[in-house]
Image (cartoon, rainbow over all chains, first blue to last red; front, side):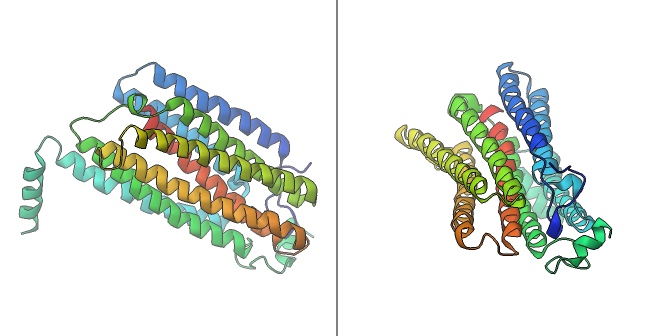
Length: 118
Length: 198
């Protein structure tokens, strides 16, 4: 069995079957954990943090070990860094607008936005 | 010879990138897919924050079925990476076994999802019923389309393994298809808690 620290011939990621099984167990456990946590009926803030936190850990395990990003070439890291940059804007810009207009009625928010453009 | 030099000697590995064209291409495609699904998630968040009331997933959706579907998709992620491992090890029989399992699990996911949608329609719940259901049907529907795309790709690779097993690009194609399938799994990893549990 090859290790995770090398590439197979042809520039392909080297497989590690034992590691795949460990990650599979972790993913199954975290799936059940996220469902169990939702049974507790936490307040909205902690509930979102717990669900999102577990989802981030699960997706990181998939990306790092199943998609072999842990041992990828620099060009792939650069590509993903660019994606992360734009995704950040994609989330932050609407969030900023939502927070800025929270507490106002939609009509008021639209009026404010129109006036701001004059 | 160093491993770096060995990689560069392979004809279809880009000399400047160090990765195969298939791998670079699929990562570029996945980058566009990340933007697509991020747009949907952003829309979901804005709609949710802007709504005066929002149903809890537990009260509207079938959480046990969603949990089973999550485990089905995670298992299919393992089987597809095992198919890739067997392609690297040049074990065609085991590759075909794991790729067939991946396809079967993908079909099972769609059957369970179809059953869930059928329950909603039977109860008179449609995308036009509420903003929550509009978001739910849009996001899970687009995800299901991606699952169907992955199933078609994996089925073609299973078929090609008969005639093109020794083709120099075959492993790269399996690796690219696997990366796409894992991405579909990751999207569901975020969809499940966002729609069902919160």
